[in-house]
Amino acid sequence: MRCAILTLFPAALRPYLDESILGIAQAQGQLQVDLIDPRSYAYDPHRTVDDRPFGGGPGMVLKPEPIFDAVEELERTAGPFHKILLCPRGRTFDQRRARELSAEPRLLFACGRYEGFDERIRQGFAWEEISLGDFVLAGGELAALCVLEAAVRLIPGVLGCAESAQLESFESELLDYPLYTRPREFRGMAVPEVLLSGDHAAVARWRTAEAMRLTARKQQLQRGQP
Ligand SMILES: C[S@@+](CC[C@H](N)C(=O)[O-])C[C@H]1O[C@@H](n2cnc3c(N)ncnc32)[C@H](O)[C@@H]1O
Image 1 (tube, rainbow, N blue to C red):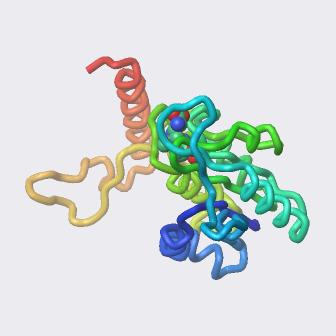
Image 2: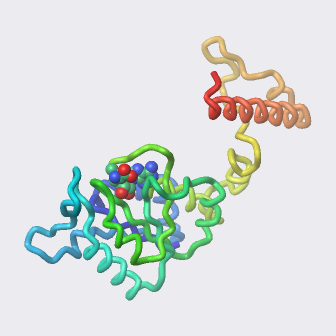
Image 3: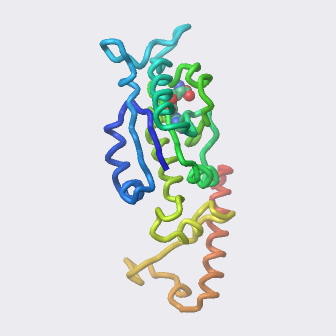
């Protein structure tokens, strides 16, 4: 997968991108990430990428010209990208979309800052608008990393154990079941006996029951019930 991230803070992203799963995917040649700073496409002496909103109001708005120039140059040189605009008004991201995006050969993320994007940036390209949830971040960078990481770990061969991605939360109707490792007892808390029994059918039954319990519990929490 080739990925490009439009961000005013490329230096903040690189250390995270080069660690763990995303770093491994790059080292294996399964992922290439280009960080593109719209300031490089601002041609005035101050490299201006934002301006005050027409009609008044607080804050600054990302100007269209640097973003249009950056996207157009990228696609001219590297071909078309599936373009994702991170913003609170987008569709809330989920595991199903992560799996679909993991099959995209090229992803472009545009990270907003300040009050967000000039509306013509939205109009000018066929963006998929993605939100992380009903809260407001200071910028789209963390959202881009979340979406990218969720997608890249599903590219075949990136995870050491492919089975682990198939068994985890949101891949089925149920959340993941509780996990334990050594020691068998820690500060008075013991590993459930069934997991030590060697009875694989009993372990499977226990895990399903626990996954159902945790899924029902989360549904209760989502409904605001204690
Ligand atoms: C401070 S926010 C702008 C918020 C905007 N004025 C509003 O009220 O919807 C700056 C940028 O952070 C990113 N952002 C904020 N919240 C987000 C969310 N929930 N999901 C994805 N991106 C988000 C977007 O890229 C946005 O343009």
